[in-house]
Length: 367
Ligand code: AHG
Ligand code: MN
Ligand code: MN
Image (cartoon, rainbow, N blue to C red):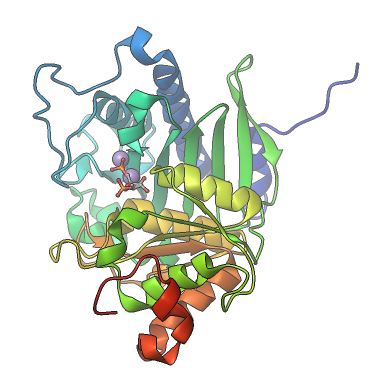
């Protein structure tokens, strides 16, 4: 039997660096440290109950709450530690920011500081961890402001407030039936599968492309009564199926792990919506701009898909705070553009469209 020659993640990164002959290699070294953190998390997750990693950090009472006001799982904390420990030593980072840390993380003074900043959601979909459903990690690499690099000073939240277009790399790891790493360094999107025998990420999905059309959408329909009109219209039209204005049947999915939904969409198309809604006026959306929406946005755009707030391209948004939330729509290009059109059009009234006076499933009394 001949074995198929496959590239490792390291080889892929070396190939990418050849496009920039003057590059130092720091960037690649950082990404390999991130990959190591993801492998460590994958091992922890795989032991599940046997590894005593499920549940909350304090078993009796779930008191540990992160900056989002969300109860932390043990694995949220463990994953965060893997990220900081595996990446702080290399000398490539000026600082980090994470969903699980209120303030930016400082590289200890005993270690060298570098020119990049790492932003991450160490465990996405962590509500799924106790029920053995796919979770993942999401990360983004930014360049530190020049003055931070020159002075070596501590990083502050303002240093991270860069629009998504400034990201140098973005990726996610998926801890599912197989462990995968999906990565963009600004030259398309590549997917790697962890070979458990070798402990190496192998290039299995070079140049991932999101199909531009789809008949699959993902949204948490329990929020329907809080949706804004353009989102209601979009979902209503999908649900109307073949006899409706879209003239085709749609399928619906909701895993409650954005990484898992994003991966499905990268593999076979689809659209994901966690739009801004009226549920809690203090939260303009559920997902976080810097470590969820922006990295996923860069990956989608690099794969020929699209990411948006519904109103403007996600990557154009100027962040205003480290843990800012935002409405997020991403996936197959034509579908995301349609949702953007619905947001741009003046609000239509139901009476304009007699079909939906009869058929709307997700509709409240005044729309
Ligand atoms: P996290 O576990 O990092 O807090 O993120 C969970 C996110 C996202 O992965 C998922 O799409 C969404 O929250 C699920 O929200 P609902 O519980 O409202 O479905
Ligand atoms: Mn998350
Ligand atoms: Mn998380």
